[in-house]
Image 1 (cartoon, rainbow, N blue to C red):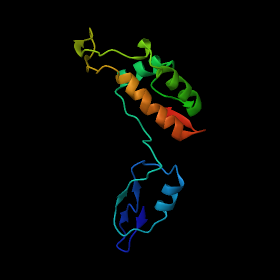
Image 2 (image 1 turned 180 degrees about the vertical axis):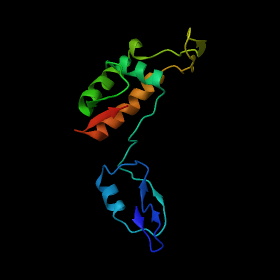
Image 3 (image 1 turned 90 degrees about the vertical axis):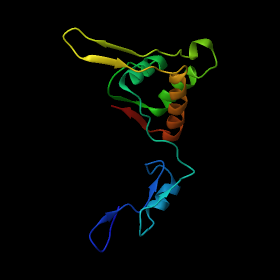
Image 4 (image 1 turned 180 degrees about the horizontal axis):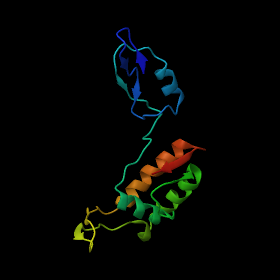
Length: 142
């Protein structure tokens, strides 16, 4: 962000990666651009993965983590779990899930969306890329 003569704040640079994780981003963030522009940093990958709560909890269990709504793990350790789940074996391909809607007695109405086959596997591929980019950093969720 930079402050202009009129007092307004403007984004000088926004990389697709949304984080400053590489030299190319650090150089670009130092630029003095007069108007907001978006650049694509060829060195960066996604820095977040968004899943519905149920999918995230099932994914954590699927890769071997304790399912929890918040936590963190070393990227290198999570990468090992992801690679194990990406071996091309039958047990590493998850089936589709049909959607459901029901009411919990004296509780809320619950809607579970359907899920395509190999959804957990595709999220694992994305997570592995994130882990590899993170290097010796932590991966956090919550």
